[in-house]
Image 1: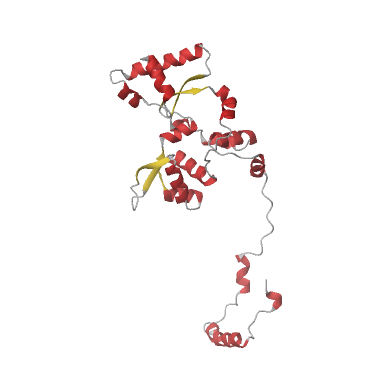
Image 2: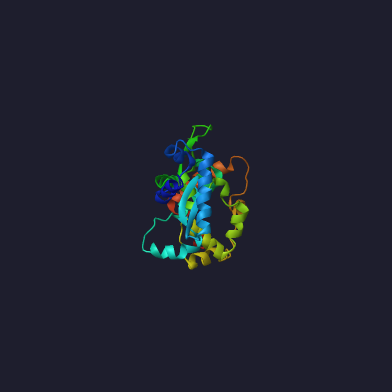
Length: 249
């Protein structure tokens, strides 16, 4: 059975879960499957192969070792990959850390409508509907998929970096660039430099609403304001009420 399992792990284009393997080997217990996988890993390690059995996305698959990533990248350099937009990455991160979550909650965090980004992520099978909220209207709840785990090479959601760790990442140029590439976004050195460039100091703002009461008419006894309205309308009609040029912006 070991070589049969090896052939399956080599041929599959997605990690094979215990459930799928049990359907192929119905007479084999889960414990035995895990034992065979471990034996294959040890066999590859002992022979110093360029590949091994990796566990991610809830299953196993044969893959090249990270040390050989540079030469493998040369093989696929001419292949064009569909990269996620900045909005897509933002929504994917929010769903990953806050799932299950509604679209309105995502919009509230981002400050903009996220329907388009959610639709794109859904088409790429990175997020999916996982239920309905018990709040008013029972809106859809979104969560990440197994393909999301495969994309990041994670065994489960609990392997996502802690938020404090992410704060360390965004404070270092090299680590930030590596992280962006890991989640599927190519960034240039100029983009990284722009991110770390301090925001320009804002010019002193014009007098705010605190000065507005000084520009409004002084309080007058009841009835005087109403009495002056017809005169103001007449002045406006005749042009006498135009603003003084010096008062215009």
